[in-house]
Image (cartoon, rainbow, N blue to C red; front, side, top):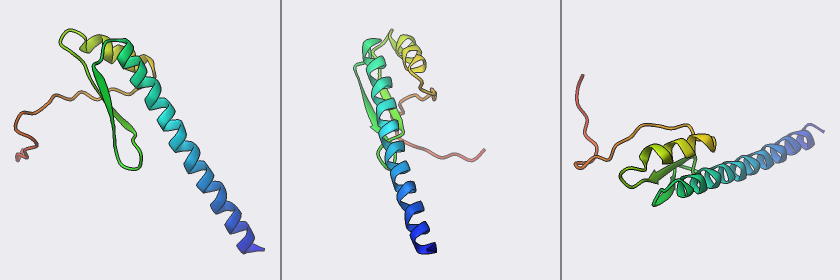
Length: 92
């Protein structure tokens, strides 16, 4: 009986993981579409396991509008700037 219960729990967890991935993709699609409507040139989903992060590319003068649209669509904004020289580490 315990094995049957464990198998059932595993199936429920697997189904929940699938729902989480679909939910994340739907959310990312909604945020991406909001960014495009606000003037973004495009966006890129990134992150391990199917995403979880979206980078939108906004032309000069549209950054604030794109960010506001993404936030209104449910995104948590992380301030980033492109680096010309790649990643560097420095001691504090």
